[in-house]
Image 1 (cartoon, rainbow, N blue to C red):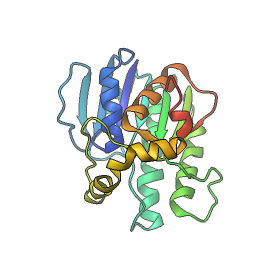
Image 2 (cartoon, one colour):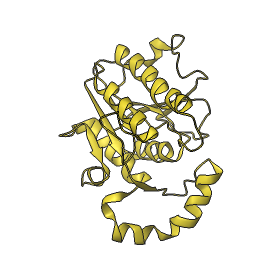
Image 3 (cartoon, rainbow, N blue to C red):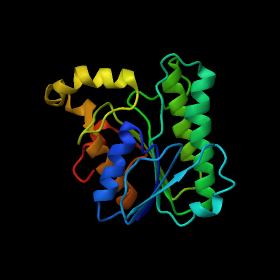
Image 4 (cartoon, helix red, strand yellow):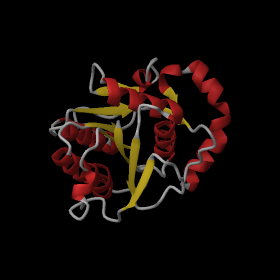
Length: 221
């Protein structure tokens, strides 16, 4: 399986990339982003691309891939709805529309979030926007498209979030992960489990398009 990965320098993307590099089911990974990951591996090719809404210059290089793992995302904290929509909806759909045109047999897996509003009409801005993004992705002519909705994600293997406030968040809550996992297993996952689940779904499919935290944690995921 040949995979395109967006967001490989973020916390979730780092975990997904590590699992792809480990997996015998993934033969090649193309990481596209504004920065390099700094990793060197025989299966990994990296492409720095500044404008993630315009792929006209590299369109032909995006052919021949079986799956896309889309791990880009930002917090809505302090953002206007317009700015959040541009990053969350517009950018994601620009990528997805390009890939759907180049790879009709592709499976597209989008990292969304627990609490996303599937109606796209609710009062909570981030949940409404992510719901609209999911729904638009499901309409594109991919072989299949899925949305993963993790709850609390524990970074594993020394992965450190790149934003200061997230580093502070995990410095406080990270040591309590065993407690969260014991008390609320349906709302807790890890970067490793995210990566394994996405690879599994890309290879085998899933019975539903929206995968909640408990689905991500299922055996085989």
